[in-house]
Length: 91
Image (cartoon, rainbow, N blue to C red; front, side):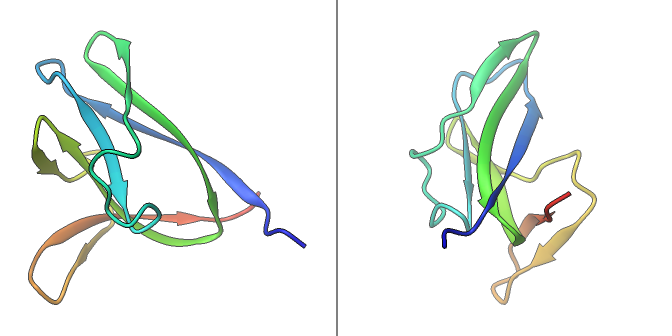
């Protein structure tokens, strides 16, 4: 039986960037596979369907790694890098 996935909406406000991608442990940190959509007024959005669990992620905006400023949970890797963290649970 296939694992049920949860709809997760990622938002990022960056009015001066041209391209934003969502990268994380759910897509092998790909900087190209999950482009975010410019929904106007400097807001970017991406809908993902993720299995339950804890996922690390960042935004890749115009070639720069950016933590999610709206996310209060950060994981520090063994290399000292910081990643935003999301807990995905079924409702």
